[in-house]
Length: 379
Image (cartoon, rainbow, N blue to C red; front, top):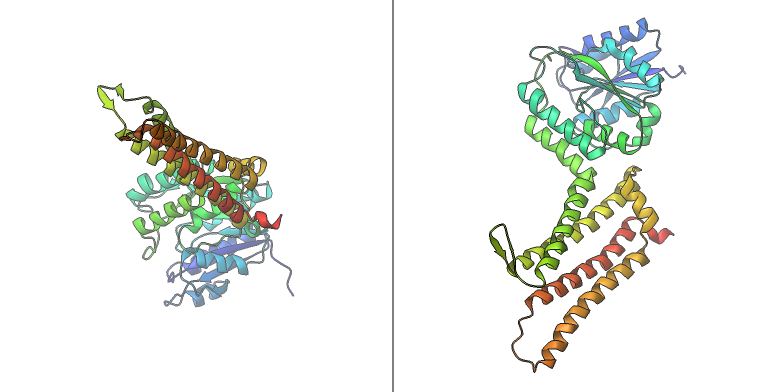
């Protein structure tokens, strides 16, 4: 049996007959010039134009990915790769596989994941549509940086490299174009070292498989689902602060500000904000716990849960808030009975009491939910 190669170059392929042979040959030549033992693995995603045969003729090992999708092809190709260093690049002629040694050198220097940057390098005329170059890629890369805490200048570049250990640790799973975002997001969350190198981006041959709005939404959707802080926690905490502040301000009576009069009608809005905010925070913390269980990621919110949260503490806090709500409503009832059970118009304190009752119940049941997701039953 042959020894495992040092480098595996993995290329997804779907009907790339015009370029796949050249890409394979260029990659093999680059490996030879650099003195790197290597292989080229082409992950065919259902080509009907003879691409697999052309890839094999150029010296590649072809594996078949029966599930359609950019990510599905890479999952199949990386699973079949045998090298320690894994270099990824499309088989459509857009990336220069002469850059393979530079990617491998960055990995050997200590990076776990290396992303090619077209924006730090050169984008040749006609290689990238205006919408992608000046809107789509910069916006989505910026959002990824904000959500996950590390700026990557070209988060959707298709040429990148990673170590075998990093690939096995990340356990990537998405099957579409969002695979590119998943790889960077999980790497950052797991504390892997992510680097970049400038590359040249060439015009592709043949028809692009990218669908701008559909695939852009898939990237954004994935980032939102993987990042509970901007989706749940940040808006939830803001709603809680605004809601309870408005309830406290309006409890004594109407407030005049900015030339307007704010009365108890706005307390209904404040109550809804506070209740919804607590629900979002509970969901966000549960999502954080799930993300760690499924993806082995961690952050300061999970550290907070580990240090501060127990089911018992959550139940105590929820019971205290519930008791406060019952106390407010009990006071209203006692006052009504003392005044002879006449007309009752204690709207302001009643709204505060109702809000506390609902929030207390949310905290009680939310604590159980977080503990279930965190699998506290195992000890």
